[in-house]
Length: 390
Image (tube, rainbow, N blue to C red; front, side, top):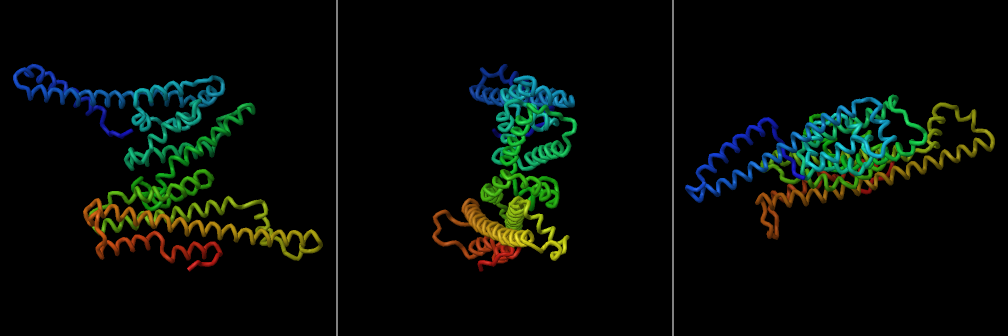
């Protein structure tokens, strides 16, 4: 679905102006065949304006109706467990039927009620993935929607004191939480770079974005989706590069910085989840004098377990570092290809050229180094306690 931004009042005024023009053309259409052609064009435009106005106004009215339902405290929460279809199901289905998803997404404020109040979560997931699709939704619009969605989810998960759930419905609530995790993976992965070096395009700082990304990467399915989707995100971010050399270099460097930060954040999240209760032994070593509990068979067994755990932990870190090196290599290749394709599209190189110019060759090499330098790869291993492959 393509996105169309419009001021609904101005759109209405434009529709009235087209209506007046159409009426004037109708009065004189027999005078000249060209008038009839012009009338056809005006009527086609008027039809599009009416449909767009209807979609925008319908979405706005539906959002007001939905927010009123979702603001009733625990009432909407209870409704989903006592009825097979809620008011949210009815409203959202009407929104989709009237192609009003875009205006509804920007007007709605009861995001938590939408996530938990609709019985058929597949419809909710389809709604949010459409509303944040990078191929159809402008960067700033998607950013505003995703930031608002994340804020609602995090606030809800931090304080559920107002939502009580009977034991009989607990499994349903847990299943819905897993569904939301899957949705987060779908929504965040294409936009991972906008949580770091491209955060300014979403009107927040890289520090704010990285903090929020780290929170989301604690969810395994999100971390997996972000890692898998990074090459595509890099390719998209390097499409339609600036023609100015300095601006183009700045864009490439920004995307490279965001890519590196994302790879590091994914690795840190994976290592954080590799912890087991045995990791508490690390704290015991620091807090309890070794001699006071290193006597007897029990102490010997504990010491052996600790050594094994630390060895295993280093193995985990080396594995994460190897994956980071591999990811850097992949995104570097993707980035170089994107830059080369942009050079062809912009005319800096012919599509049938057998040799690239020295300037483009330098730019491609600079791109590779920006995404996958020896220092980056060595740093991944050094931070993990491993050995640099260089």
